[in-house]
Image (cartoon, rainbow, N blue to C red):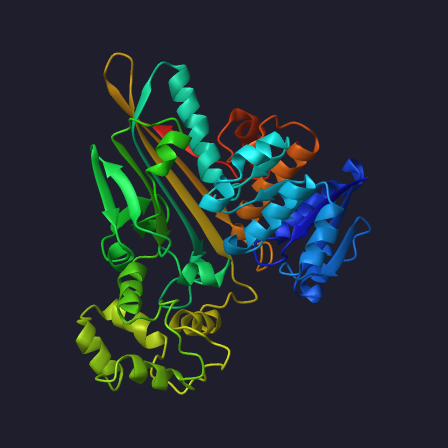
Length: 439
């Protein structure tokens, strides 16, 4: 009997756990689902005979030692900042590790040691990052096999709300980590290359300098630059490509309004406000003492767009809504507010949209374009499109690793055929499939 430890049973874990439980009997796996909330872990395992739910504190070294020591492979569904304690224990105890998170500098630094131990630490195997990498590399490798060259690549992805469930002015509801949404873009300058020129945006300008992207059947979306696109040139084998950008999609007008929240200091995760403000009205007056209400705030921000004003008014920033004593920063206060305002309703459905655009130079020097798009709608508020597209590719990869089908070792992302061929094939069987066109 092989043992798989899953740490974290939150929003994105449902489809991952379901898949592994579905295969657990035939594969002779025992799953341990560990979460700080025992009730949440029990909900996800649902009394399955091949699974055990436990309460788990990832910061407790003795608990980590015990549970990781008993596992053959560890899946970390924790927030990215919490992976390293798990990763270091996996390295020391000789256990494979799989996550859906971006590879951090600290994780990357373990590569040589992970290789030496004959282990695989798989990262970026969710939706974005994950499915985007695998679907892009499939096309890139096909282009190379024809002796052609990719000379421009744009990739966009958004976790959105389905049109029929779009019931608030922001066009957004939480289907994954609220903290990650609030702090999006704060990990460093966004970087990309366009027509051979290096481009970058600081966080202060990220949601201001956006573009509109058309998506057939769903209209137009805001797109903002996603992290460091330049780093993926080497990952994709496109070191000399003159144009490459990865972007994140939001509903039209979202970015304009979010830019205002940034300028108000409400996404600041460094300013200590713990216990200083009891209500949102007090917080706003503390941060901006010269502004007494929303009318003055909108005037100060120069908001003359009716839709943008509606979004900001919807948040009721000058209300008597209580701010909990445990809130440490404006970003935490905003997160608590949005978790109420942007709550996924009982019957709400979400949507994942992804789009790749390639410009290809043929061997004769002429050019062609390839478009690849993916749309996935959630099944319900538990099996969301986000949970499916994050959890299923990771679960399929875990199964491949457990069955010794992945020869790679070290700290890796799923850009090789050994990953993308079987993972994309199985996702397609489940209706998660890209549609390609050419012109």
